Length: 138
Image (cartoon, rainbow, N blue to C red; front, side):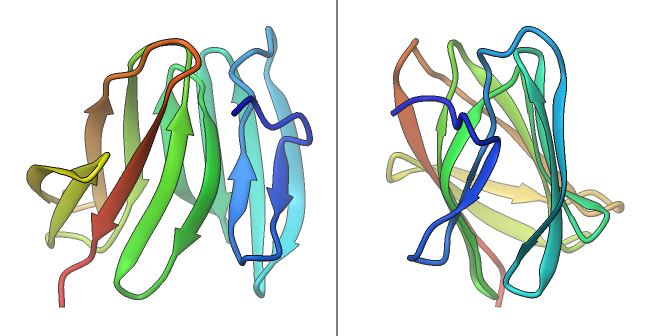
């Protein structure tokens, strides 16, 4: 896989792909309509950030490329690619416990902060991707 050169794309399977960690300077794409929501992406080698309807949905430090991002009532799933390890922050429901799996390995439950954010690290080598799955509470 490679960085998303269009910055943000929608696939026929109902997923989004976004981010380009190879960019030297911050690049933005706003007002992207998908599934009744408005998305904005900011990306470059230092950070990738996806906003949905004005709220942060995904953020990684350093920048990353995200493939097949999908969010349902019960699940957030995507594949992440970066030149090195990344720290990912997702906006979720406040003060709830979320089960996080990376490449089908359960890394445990993470409790969302009062502001509704969870953060976790993903270890990556250049050109490598990891499958991430966040199971939402019942």
